[in-house]
Image (tube, rainbow, N blue to C red; front, side, top):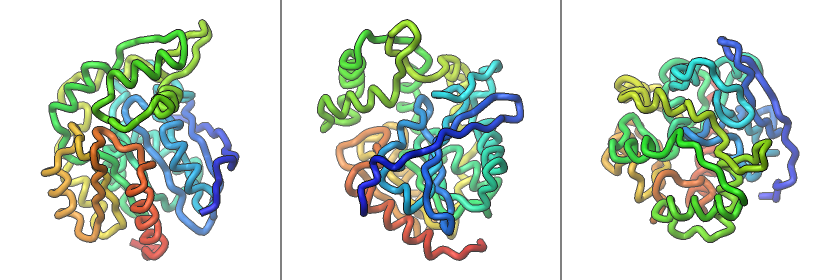
Length: 296
């Protein structure tokens, strides 16, 4: 595949029902294919999918969504709107704004929860889906780990300080990362503020509903998975994930005959989607999307 690292994107904005100006990044691609719409994890932003977009854009239109309270999207006045059902409403408003009749949803962690909700409420719009290290059941151990750090404001004087802090906290998640990998991750997760400090690029108040038991996903999510039945689906799991258990992943595959599962060896929550085995699996997923009936 051709190198598209210099392919330009356009910044776009849309409005939520409650008046928030939300941001997305739009990479051009073929109009005869459904757009790939990427939903990030709880504390992530559009930069989390740069590698995916750079690899697929041109052949596919790739839209990177920034949920409310992240990156360039507006911060909510009511922190209790930082929940999956509201993110779903925001995404539906984006689909209407861009007139996207068919999409392939890529969802990491929280983004995968939104993808499953989308499958339950708007099945016909989905031409396929990638669920990255998330399922209808979330491991309480991983949830507790996330609760321990999300919403805690920190800052660093240099990018190297930020990178080393990430390495110290996540060495068991990405044991093969070198300092360049940690620097790249630091620049995806943080921003430079007006005081010249490097800070996390999200509203600290996203933690408020997440700390209420049940709000990280909502009610029983297993029925939402059925909306993906019969569609091209790829499930990616980190071998060392503390969010998606091997047992839950197995049950998901059983519930979705014909779907594919890829386990990334030695990686925790969540794979970057840039691992060679995942890159190859995404190509297989998109080949299935190309052959998927337009209706259904």
